[in-house]
Each structure stands twice: as structure tokens, then as C-alpha cells.
Image 1 (tube, rainbow, N blue to C red):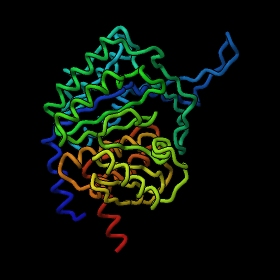
Image 2: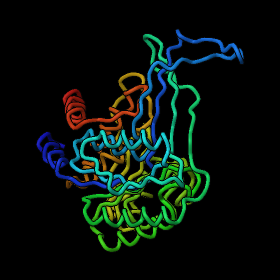
Image 3: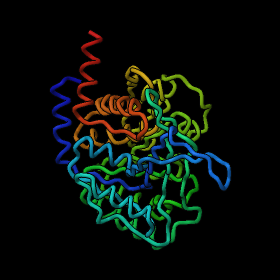
Length: 345
């Protein structure tokens, strides 16, 4: 990709309208100073003193954070939060983001707000150390009326959006935003707007999803196709190409330190390697950075290989940010892309 082409693609980001349908959670960080540790008089157990608390949108919200950092003009989160303290914090964090429109985001007393609480020990001169995480999730089926509201919101934003992301983060099917009802509505949107880029990602795999743009890792691809998990990059290219032809939509397969493979609907496939590691890393948020950059780039007219190059740069920048789930701006991505290219010459 030339610098001129990079500018051509990314200069379109401020005009984009993107919708993110999925499980928005509250990422709550407890910053702990170990020098202030005490022993509880009552239990004789260590007391970790929290010296600051940071809250930001997580899960599908991490994709949104990356789009904000990229300068995307309008963002429509479609999901739900509980009518609870964590939901209030999540709403405040979303409202603080530039370009975010919350008209299609549901607050309901029938759900708890999906929350990741992350205690971090901060020692001078060392990377933050994350202690055992405390999660708050829903373990019952999402009520029908909540799913119906999400389905209506999905159809409404799809009529306006330049691209749409569907992100399923929950461990137990049917307990989050992406229910069978929402998948049926997604299928209707796919049929009515066949040219709309729709990228789907699910931690439980994409079986049962309509034929949209599939984004997954190698293990999820192997499970979907019922093939051995260990495969070469060339084998994964062939598998991705066949799946893309079958769905009539592009497919993207992330390969951790081996980079990413992408295929178009005609079955042409490409591989883009990772950028080099430059120090300590934290891989949390890397996949969401890939999803965000793929979507923005495709909506802005990038080719499959161009979108993957931008996604790999974004992910590399994110994994070098410790103690948070990071983001990458257009300026940072451009600097990494072209400084790496200059160094290779």
C-alpha cells in the first residue's frame, strides 16, 4: 500500500456510519498499589488497596473504541445494559465517545450489565500484573422482548449504515445480544442489502450465522469445517477460499503470530504477516482491533489485502499497550506502516 492509497482510504473514515451489534460490557480496572497492602484484622487475609478506578466500554465496546480512535464519524452501538450501577457506568463511558449515537442501545432491568472487573498490581519499572478477574454475566436466556427490541434496532441501523459488525461475546448461547431472533433479523438484512459489508465474529463459532463476512481464528475455522486444528498457512488459505466461495462473502482468518488470511467471494486468497514485536505485549483486544480496522477499511473501499494490512498494523499497536485494552489511531497506523516499510528497504 502506498502512502497515497493509505490517505485515500483513511480520509473517508470521518464520513462513515458504522453499526456494532453485540455484547457491550463494562471494562472496569482497579489499579492497586502493592506498597499499600494491609492485612485484614477480621480475616487475616491480604487487603489490596485500590488507588484508582478506570471504566471503559469492553467486548463489542472495544471495537467501538477502536473506531473512535480511527476517527469514524458516526457509530451506532446496538446492544443492552442492565438498569444497574454498572449499566450507568457503561452508558457514561459510551456517551463520552465522539460520534456515538445511543438511540438504539437498550437499558433493561431484566438483564445484568456484562462486566469484566480487572484488578491490576502496579509496581515501579514493571508491566502491570493482572490478578484474578471478576466477571458479571447473565446465565439465563435473554427475554424475548429484549431480543425483539434488538432485532428492530438492527434493522433500523442497517438501513443507514455503511457497514455493520455483529459481535457475539457470551459463553452461553442465547444469554446475550446475538440470539436466534437477532440472527433471523440479520438474515433478512443480508438478503435485503446484499452489498452491505457485515462482519460477524463469535467466540462460540459462526455455525448458524447467515452468510455474512466471517471473521474467526484458525481453531474456529477448524471447528466450523470439522477439520484438524493444526494446518499450514497455505492449507488455511485454501480452506478460507472454499468457505468464501460457499458463502458468497469474504472470509478472514486470524493466525496469531502468523498474521491473517483473507479470501474474497470468488475464492482468491491472500496472507498478510504480523508486524514485528517491539517489547512486552498483552494480546487482549488484538482480535477486536482487527475487526474494527477490517470493517472501517472495507467500508471505505479498501481491497481485502489492503484491509488486512491495516488490521495487522492496528493489532500490533494495540498489543504493545499494557494495563489497558488499547486502540490505534490513523496517525499511529500510518507511522507503523511506513516506518516498517522504510526499515525493510
